Amino acid sequence: LLTGATGLIGCNLVATLRRSGVGAINVMRRDALTLGTTKHDYIIHAAGYAQPAKFLADPMGTIAVNTTMLADLLTHLKPTGRLLFLSTSEVYSGNSRGIYREDDIGATNPASERACYIESKRCGEAICHAARADGRRAVIARVSSVYGPGVRAKDTRVMSQFIDAALRDGEIIMRDGGSARRVFLYVSDAVEMLLNLL
Image (cartoon, rainbow, N blue to C red; front, side, top):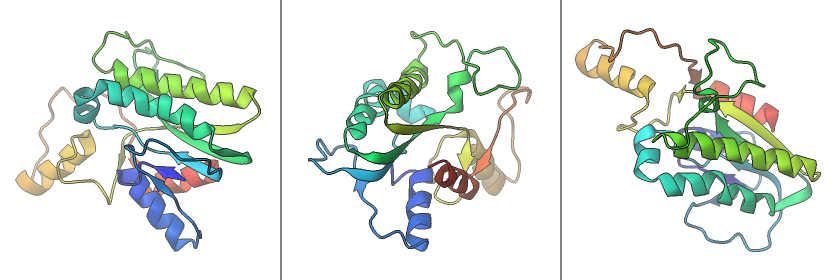
C-alpha cells in the first residue's frame, strides 16, 4: 500500500515498483476515509505536503496526514508486515549543529507557522517508535530536498525554483546571502534508499 503516489517520491516509487515486477500496488488517496479490513505486507506512507506553500495553506490537513492517517495505516499492517514512514530532515530545525546526527533533534516553536509540518512529522516518528515498542515493524526515513523527474511545473521547493530560473532566465538569483547549507537528493537515489530501508 502506498500513500502519496501523486507526489514526486510517490510517482517514482510506483514506476520503480512496476518496472521491478511487483504484482499488486494499492494506492490510497488522502480523501479515502477507510481501508476496510484489508491487511498489507508493506505500507509506504509517502503522503504529506513537502512544499511550504502547501503545508502553510492547510495546517490541520498537514497534521492529520502525518499523525491520524499514519496511526490508521498501522492498523492495516499484517503482523509480519513492514511500514515505511517518510519523515523530514526539518525535524532538525532549530538545532545549532551544522551537521546533524540521527539522534539530534531540533527545537521548533509549536507556534511557528512551519510547526504544522515539522511537529507533525516528529509526532509521526513518535507513532512509529510506539508501534515498534508494540512489536510492529515501522521504519523512519528523514528525507531532505528531493528533486528530479516528476516535479510539477509550479513546485515551490528551492531546487525547483533554481531549475526554473535557470531555464527561464539563464541565471539563478539567490534570495539570501547563499550561506544556507542544504542536502539535495535526486529522486531515483531516494527511491533506491527507501526501498532498501523497507
